[in-house]
Amino acid sequence: MTYKTLLYEVRNGIAVLTLNRPEKRNALSLEMREEFSTLLRTIRGDKEAKALVITGAGDVFCSGGDVGDQMKYMDKRTPMDNRQVLRDVNAWLPEFVNLEKPVIAAVDGAAFGAGFNIALAADFVLCTPRAKFCQVFIRIGLVPDFGGLYLLPRIVGLQKAKELMYSARVVGAEEAKELGIVYAIYPQKKLMDAAMELAGRFRHAPTEAIGITKNLLNQSFHTDQRMLGELEAFASMASKSVSYHREAVQRFLSKQPPLYDWDRMSKEGG
Image (cartoon, rainbow, N blue to C red; front, side):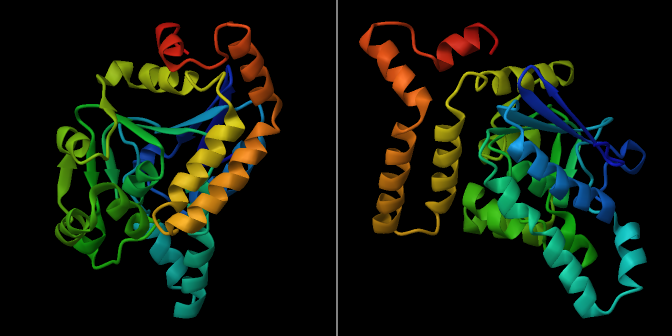
């Protein structure tokens, strides 16, 4: 399937999704949001794809929502119609946040508004020194959307999330790394190579176990310890029934190298 606003390919087991509206600084139109949601389902079912790298075309990751596009549609609908449109579009959040594959965001240039929040939904954010992050919504009298109210306080804490959202100020790459928003910073020419190398480490990983672990970690913020323990027990038993676990145990008992070794994957470039 081809998309008008996105590019998608799988390179040697790694899915690469590119926000592709460079002439609009990769601003999110309604069409892009709908295609994003559709593509997520494709990625989820793509067994060849062991991890996902998301980036932006040109010199910007994503400048946020396409305000002109939004106004065009909003003027033709009632407030309740517009509310439902936003609810439908925002249904992407649980799908993306809980996508049971590692997700790496490669951010160069601006990640503003919804673009910032797409990056926050990734498991790891890599960026260039010129990357800039901004919860820009308040500047134009909007309440933050696209999952920022859920994601940002879980990463930086409630007080810092309030400061970043109330002020709508720009956060540079180094500060973003200090706040835990960014995992690592790379020169512009090395960004995609670094993102692909990191994603490549998961090429031989137990996808099911990582996916379930990711899902449970996400639930840990709003699940009590007792319930999380129950979920952990079910998940542990389920993972023991997978062939990957049985083969890994046999390799351990016979003193063979493990199937998945993070340090070895790093040295071998994934």
